[in-house]
Every structure is written in C-alpha cells, then in structure tokens.
Length: 71
View 1 (cartoon, rainbow, N blue to C red):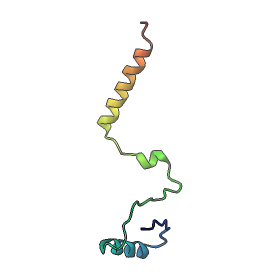
View 2: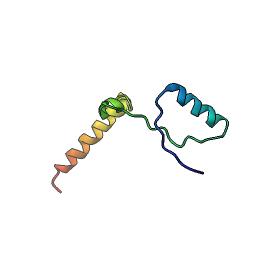
View 3: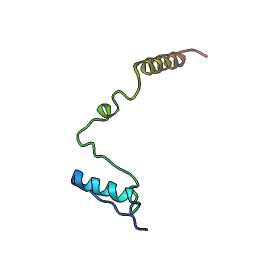
View 4: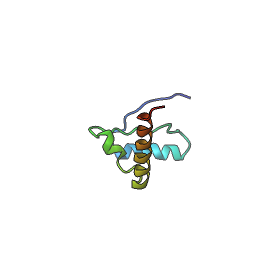
C-alpha cells in the first residue's frame, strides 16, 4: 500500500474519490479542511452551550478566590 497526499481542486474530483472509496479501491485516511482567514474564536464559536459556559466561569471564579486565601 502506498500513501499519497493530494489537493482536491474541485467538487467533482472529491466525488470521484468518494466513489473510489465506496468501491473499496482506496481509503480516505483524513480530510483536512483549510480554514484560511478564519479566527480560532470563529471556528469554535458555539461549541459549548451557555449553561456550560456559565458553569466554567463559576468554577474559574472559585479557583481564583482560593488563590487569595491565606493558608
């Protein structure tokens, strides 16, 4: 078996590759999508719910308050 890295330039080429994979002639190992110009914050926006966000903020506040305690 030989591993190749290719750049797909058109949706038709991607469809052909998917058809070859369906026929078990090739196996797509990974699909890397380029996010040119997209900020990480934009990419991750909405990945957690508002409830989870508030829980994380509260835990962070609690941890920071513990730092200020005199032991």
